[in-house]
Image (cartoon, rainbow, N blue to C red; front, side):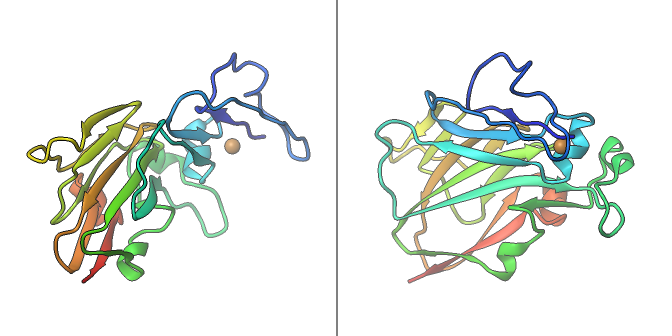
Length: 211
Ligand SMILES: [Cu+2]
């Protein structure tokens, strides 16, 4: 059985978040009242293993009057605890806090091999969600500074003060937000979780910035 814990709405979870068995279905409705990058995930026990199997996602509700940008990306960080091929995530590794890989959008280092494009001078917005199940992130762009930081419902930095900048967006599991930055020169700008052991496990990619 599986279920859904849907952070983008608020209600008594008893019935809508119940576990349904294979072949059964459940229709879930919600009203988008609050902005954010909201996690949803399976909440059937052991929840850590269901989330580690990839049963999670994000719903993005823009804040009112969110300015247009030139490019917008979504990066969801999560961990992989590899079980046998074709099998499920390894519960012992999960409980020992020993991930095999920490990834953006499901695959280790995928944006090293297929960098995300941008151009010099463009304003780029990056939504980030930490889906866990268990590790926090510190999202950082090497060579970049964030002019805007929005986290969990409020601006930490709204871009109005050109002397103010940010170097990392800190997110605990299930937290999300966005950053904005402009690349000053052409080049390859790595982005990482600045929990360095996780960057080295695969939470690493590159923005390829064209002149
Ligand atoms: Cu599940």
